[in-house]
Image 1 (cartoon, one colour):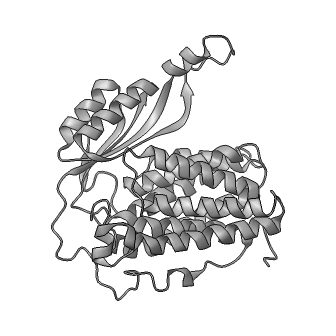
Image 2: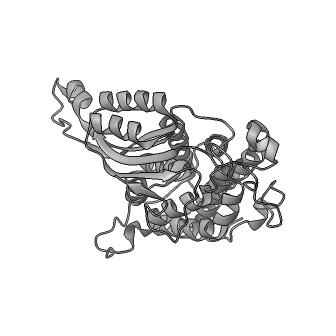
Length: 352
């Protein structure tokens, strides 16, 4: 059994640092097998850049300013930064995952098996709901499998909050994530035809194994990736010979009421696909007095949303977004041109 377990805020920061390094090392191979939802070869890059943003959330702060006894606060801040700088489908879903994980952990000084189960479950629910048309066989399925396994392990140990139970729950989550990654090849026709597993799913597996490693004080399990179809270095890049994907990816941040956000989601669904909308931080303008107007205040409160969509042309989508609010950080990237970590934002597209 593990002999050195640390599940405090320092472990959470180690997790993000490990994930940044690991995804940086694996980004090329993740890009090489990226075929869904579009074969644009940038899943590894997008995940790496988004995780890097999360890991850097506390880089320029003194320890005095950092939350020192609240794992939820640490992950919430990292998730907020990740959401603001999220790249692509995979990066946006990672940011959603991190923000949602933080919620059940708020106010707790350490992670435990019951809290891990609750956090992963909240994350998988939020990730599935962020997409207008969620699809099994992706990182969503991997996260769902990990959450279910952690929950079952916690139930089997009657909510034991010991370090030993946490180790067992982390092992169960990573093993279930691996099994789910293997299954992705047969869940999506494009993956089956190319004989590869889902790139986003592998990325989520690596992120979860980094959490396990950071908490348990053990090395990453490199053998997890042995035998995954398409993941050997000698395997070909699956995009060779494939036609370029038409269209662009539009992303932005915008403040909207829940009703306006629902309207935007519907209109973007009509224009394109891969629509992801998720809240960034807490709402503004909420009445906290506890009076009879709470429901009305909640309906009118303005929330910040991170918006992502794939569309044939940028202009109609940008016009719809602007018709409902004042967006910031609008970026447009060609789906046929994978982004490179060495380039600044907008290098392969442009910003409005």
